[in-house]
Amino acid sequence: MVYEPSSNHERSSVESMRSQAKEAADRLQDQVRAGADQMQAGIDQARSELTEYERQTKQWIRERPVASVVAALVTGYVLGRIAARIS
Image (cartoon, rainbow, N blue to C red; front, side):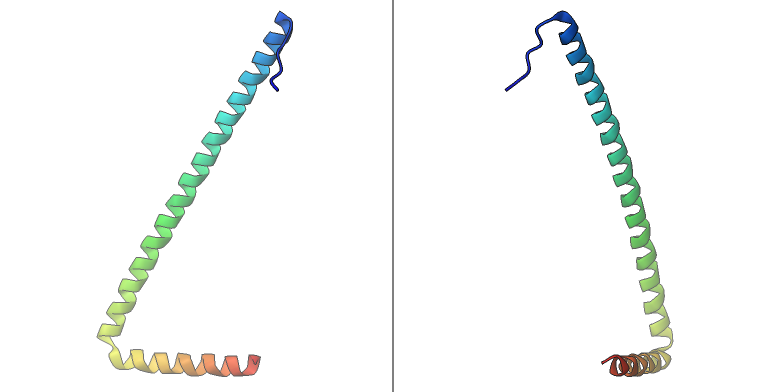
């Protein structure tokens, strides 16, 4: 059921409210878009940093294969000890 204003004053009031609601919706939509753009920029930055970290890690492993294996073994041992204490 749609409200049908009966007087010019009511029509004017309804149009004013309709206009205000549209303006508020437009502002909200702009804010949501700005927030989404900001989030996407953060995601892109994080992706870029992770890609660079991955590249550096792979380079370090290629340059130091023995140290990499030792580091992996020590890390596994430490994590295993921590997991055993938690269980």
